[in-house]
Image (cartoon, rainbow over all chains, first blue to last red; front, side, top):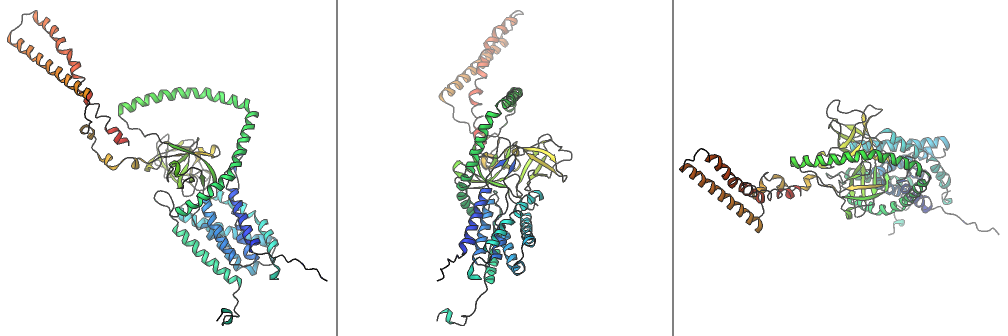
Length: 172
Length: 381
């Protein structure tokens, strides 16, 4: 007689809620006013991982709603104009969602290229909005100082895709 | 009839479409929020309630993460104090020796300045009360440079209050809740601070751009600035007190004048909020519009002792005038012999002049000084 196999279901709790909470916690931790040898902690836009990975893992109604709330959290926590990061993250999510068929199945450099393009696009949008609102263009050096750490987070996004893409056997 | 029995029974909307609908709605919501979030005239936000509620909750959370960092820093300083005690002692001795000269000069200058102020009747700025707080969270990106500090309206902090460290000006308060305040730093892309160059007294506008050294714009006068000039707050506009140290002028790689901030010399951990209000807020319009000598007509009633002194002085003056008139009359009636005039004035002079100082000087004394302090509280309050 064949023994019953435990079916592990990867629900929204696993691929949406827990990562979202982890991202928020990491953002708060990196907001600590710590200065070592004159250097501050890096301040990457960590939710960019979710905005890139979630639409590739699986289209969902819950994911963009949670991403929108995360964007509002960033705006309130970082004192940026309310709606700025919500708009940029939704822009990334929408773009990846539209190009999902194009990106599906690609790995490695092409996937990183897509992540980098999405990140640069989001920062360009944020740069435009802030420049128009403040009538003053932010300096490029601090911009690079935030873009580079965000790009360095790609391995986490890649790991999420490997871990959760098609992870729910009900969708096989 | 149930939905599944209807004509839409076999219609299955693709997940991607529903997700796209949520994305579109969220984008519209974000744009509406962006358009609705405006800066108020005091420097706050039209979304101040939402931001305040969030910061009131985020403050304690940030404090939890900031506490271990602070403890670790204190432990490092404690241990480092032992290892570097000798070198630190030498450095401090040299610094004390240098500062003694400055202290003596400061005392002398303060004395001279006080005398000048008294001579000119200057109304100096009143001392500004302060509230000390600690940074519990910060944002450092290109789009925002701000800090959360753990003092709020419960300690009298208000939107617009300047924030300083022991090194110099840091920024201004833009949001306040009961126990937490949001400070926008001088380096923020939306920050504009009126400053002056100490050497030439020329005015400029310090404009943040997210970098460590904000730009100097609209510098008044040609050749009014050179590298190394100290930059102070000018106090123009009434938002900041005049003379707060800001930084040192330096030429940037882009050719623009920039300011190396004094507040960059150390970690911005403990800060002081100046509970400063502009003089436009401190003085009532009626007090400002009052005529300059209004105090003379609003002198307080003299006390009984002052009334007695005034009457006594007036009586002495009247008696002296009467005695002088009688002597003059007698001198006119009987022409005196030649040696007599020499003796007469000498005898008469003490009689006339000796009471005069006593009679003339006290008389204005109780009256004139008493109105003088009267406008001072009204003007300074």
